[in-house]
Amino acid sequence: MITKHSHFIKVLEQYEGMIYHLIYKLNIIDRDGEFYQIGLIALYETYRKYKGRDIFGKLAYMTIHSRLIDELRKQSRVNKKETLVGRIEGYTLTTLSYGHIDPYLWKTIKEHLTAKQWTYVQKRYIEDKTIKTIALEENTTINAVKYLGKEVKKKLRIILKDY
Image 1 (spheres, rainbow, N blue to C red):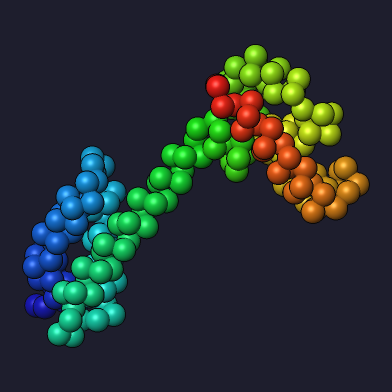
Image 2 (cartoon, rainbow, N blue to C red):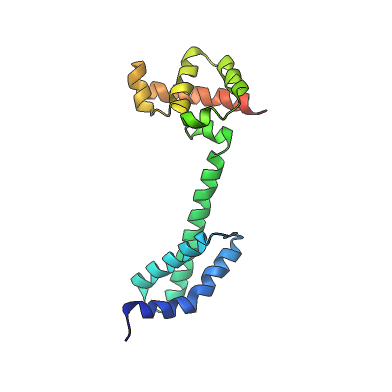
């Protein structure tokens, strides 16, 4: 009995090496099999969309390669945001993580900021509020809050350079 999945199993046997090759080519350390899984899904989606075409192998290669690179970029962005400077520049700190950061750092930051700028840091990074919420609470415009955020980020880059 031939099922609809048995055809894909044959394709998988034929192209599984391609997934491993691309993982190796991109210097990916795939301890958990996450990237293999991404490659497998990309192969399956390519199979469903382009099965039987002469250029299936090229399409599968391009699709798997693109998905792996997309995941690498995504993880790179996450890793970048996990640094303290990255948190300040774009990632919000949760109240839980606030307590785990050096209190001296917060004191230093507060000393270098105006009262308005410190309020922005508290509400945006410590309390995890949106720009719109901050604007409503401070009775100002969203653009004013964004501008304040840019000023704060400039100061924080200087302050955190040595940290």
